[in-house]
Length: 287
Image (cartoon, rainbow, N blue to C red; front, side, top):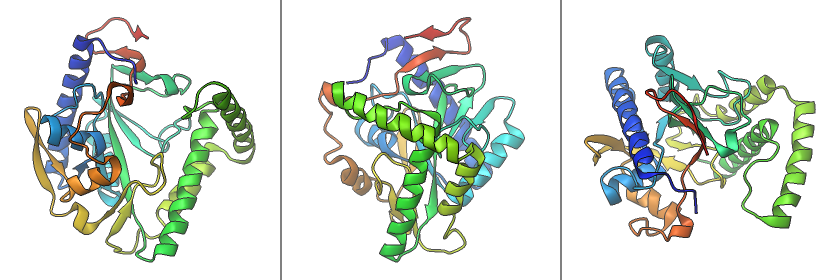
């Protein structure tokens, strides 16, 4: 079970994220950019009509071309308010996602407390890349991209979160520390990032009708076809509405089983921060 928030803190955090989401939707609509809610954001919309009561982030997916255009618009027109944090902008960032962070805020997860980036309250943005219809070629691309993505994590986080405790966790961290040393000897951040991106874009020039975000915890968790995504559906979310994939329920069932059932307390997870600061605070809250 994740560490719980003070109720008033979580409510305030969710309100910040909702306002950021309103900006995001306007930017997408104004620039003809297609997006779709993912994972816990989809569960929240269907089961709770908004945020999962204990959730503290918003997950949004875009096909790669829309992802690139979105980042361009944010950098060009909204850099006074938002900071893009990703492995392209920062040589210390360990993931192949982008966080759209609200400037003037701080949100640093426990796992990221050694990462030297301007991490703030954020929207989590996931790029989906074209993959081939041929199963063998797809498997080869996905496996290579996923493994390289894990190397990027290890390059910057020698002791990442592992699904073990006690002696097993110590053994796992011994192994990750060795990998961290080897990766840093072999690769600069730029070289490794470019190698990952090259693999991700291997089939980008082809209209394959099949897409994947390669870097989930489990390889193969985020595969979509064109029919899975389109036509986009609009579903109420808090006091607004949000776009989701056409076959949202099917994708959530494949990932979580009966997602409409509230999980037991020991399976509740969030990103409870090591450090948190809102715009109107004059100090950072540490946990």
